[in-house]
Image (cartoon, rainbow, N blue to C red; front, top):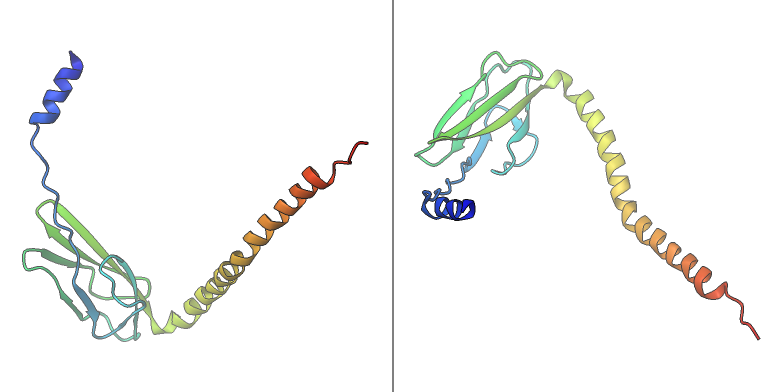
Length: 153
């Protein structure tokens, strides 16, 4: 009986209409530089600014039905975060813009480049190390299983 009730609830419950995806079509900072080219699926960016700039000049394109709200875009300091919220019905999507001022840019980029060097090194050689280890294990197992047995007369 409980299964019948569950089946009836599932059949007669209202179908959910899948919400349209909320994205910015384009995003450009006219008085700064995005660290990466804009991709609507990436919602976190670093913006490089000159030290005398205190607000972002943001140019964007979005569906006219979407409400847009820009938060904390004033008195920008190093490590400030500007948030762009897109709202439609009950759906909200946020883009975060992390601010780096020129005075701190050199040290931050230097630290990031060290991490990138290590990860690129590991990625390049991982392609060769993994097959080499697998091949070595196969050869060792082959020797143990087939060449280690002595023929009995």
